[in-house]
Image (cartoon, rainbow, N blue to C red):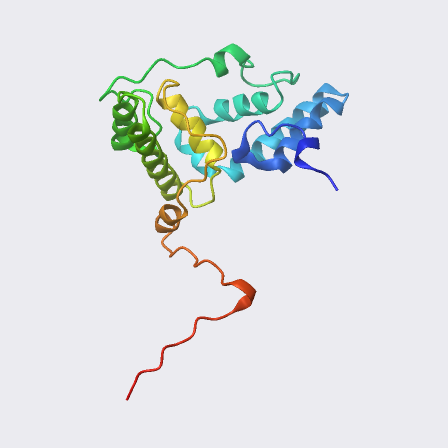
Length: 207
């Protein structure tokens, strides 16, 4: 049995474990031309997994950048774009000024970007923590309206930190509101199972 601690790091969770394993196997291909062809095949798989990325400007370059990130910036292939540097990808962005959305992600929209900027300006404390959770739930709901597939909470946490300029962070291991997610998918959240498979008894009406 393979435990999670024994697996290679999942650097971009939105593409899943299988794609990460395909990327990890690239350096073992000795022939550069064959390695490049396999990288192009992985790009096509990534596009099928995240078709909405085609709505973004220069989406092909973004896919190649993601591939280099998953390869820990050590991939040697004939890419159609210059490989990104670790510093370029991982640098903390400048804080997002209130009301300015030049860096906003299309699937979140201006209202949520305003919300992020407003919460980031609040003083630290329990009230701000509640506002952060509410903001993250709204982000997950908007993401699922944009992409009907599931989304890991890690993706929302990363986007929240990015668009707040590093000022807002979700606590590690937190689970976002499943009722909010179910609402975005147009269904009711499942009721909690009863112990030992017991069923709820119906109350008989008195005559």
